[in-house]
Length: 478
Image (cartoon, rainbow, N blue to C red):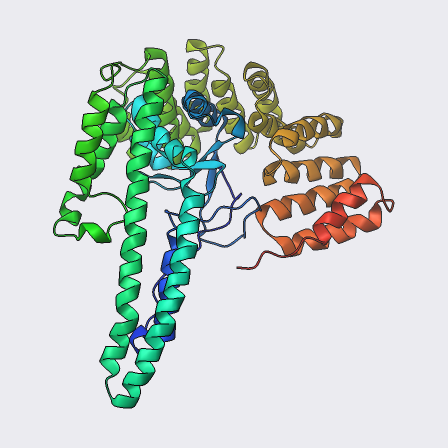
């Protein structure tokens, strides 16, 4: 499990200070708040690589977890008529329980939501809700609402400015400010009401998709019930017309009635799927939490496979490679055809400074996983790190195949550049380095490396054209 930057950092919106002294500034701040509603989660995700800014959201990549999430979403997307839309589930490096959509192609889910979901059905219910947003085209519709609201806001602001000018001349400044604020508040309420309707619609659609796939909506209900209990105190006395989501108790009651009407209400998750879910949660704990936290969650007295998995990961991550290898070997003995145990063994050896020993288990992991590209990249990294020039050509072949399926993975391009460097092919090495920098969001470095690569390639050759594309890419403005 590794952190990678693939999407732009969150664009943050906040009201302007000192707005009382400037009606224009107040209107602009309100416009920014309206625009923020488009994201629903304050994250704008485009198809371009990330701006490499410290503190921006980072993504987590893991072959095992991503395969499980694909298995969770596939039947739901099919029921929603979105199976052929290449919609991906993206894992955010955030420990809070949250999931959202920010474009029409991806469902974003925090690793905290995966870790805190006790059953597959609970996270499947969340994914079904987010699929409801995608199937309903809520993002594009919300953008239309925002555009209309912004037009109304501009008109209201202009009218308010006229009143403010008149008020200033007559000495009635407070009346002028009220003339600006009142229409803005009304428009904001309209927008929030529209977003509450979308949330209710997504709940209904999610239950519909679960019914269509023969799955229970109990997990979805349990999740939102937990949200309700957690936010009960915070919502006390809140104005329901100033909320972007339905009030918790009201929403849970409606969802409970809808979910319990399903013939699948009491259907349990398949035990094999529950085990995969528990293994995923254990893996997240092992990689993302402190060692003492892992050992509290999974004490030595717990001899289950997920507990042993979490402890093995925590052991290698915190420096005891020999003990970790013993624990991982025991896992492999228990499940000799589990590709992710071999992946873990190879990763531990690689990060422990033993790349030559990592190659064999990573080859086995690639074979058993059906050539998962993320594991292929790890194998390519081990081959390159071995510093054996004989492995350079194999590493290039493996990394190119992996990158054809994961074209946004900066790590793959970095390892590819090193492999080409081992061969002395500096043109391809510069190009791969430029692609890695571009995918990290470092466009300045990417253009510099691509410019150098162009001088090494024959003009008009495929490598020259790729480098030229990077050189001529317009910088992304913040």
